[in-house]
Image (cartoon, rainbow over all chains, first blue to last red; front, side):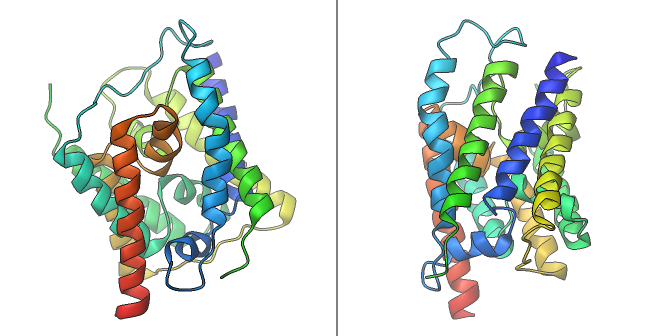
Length: 138
Length: 139
């Protein structure tokens, strides 16, 4: 129960950060990606602000034997650079470049009540589901 | 150059980083939004859905809190209709295939010094910039 409450509070902080940084505004994101246009460096400051916390923070936290509210740290196990990673990143990049939305900002932007955002989120979930069909079952 | 939001960017970015660090410290999880969402949709382990759903609910709530404070959200859509739908499909499909997005690979993966995340982040940044170049300056 405590881990569900903490996930909610941490999610709230994350969503608040996405809104404060204006990363939920696709125009800000496209402005950053549009290096040949009126370039908007805001995303760079957001990445910098986030990494300023996580780059030193993560190694410190991972020194602990276990997290505060769970039995163990659930970390990614894949370490090889495989085709899925590369092809997936390319496909994601194309979609991101078209709409200026990546998953976090798109979900947070649901708060606006915009039907267009909801359409994007539904399509994103459908895309995730389609990709999950390709995964090999254990 | 467009007017950058330096203060909001740095402050919001630090809050995002703090949230990612807290999720790792408290729940022992990586704050990768595509992965958290993916686990709500399709999870094979019992008890995996509730914390993920709570996180996403919070994500929307946090943005709503900012909207309440400043009286609305900055939201200027860059695509509509079938184009927006296609973009959503690509973002969902690609992030699942690549096991991560801007938050999982970008913010958390780089902090873990993961070579996979560094490669993924460089690829999606460059491809997205190329896509914008082609859609805004060529076609």
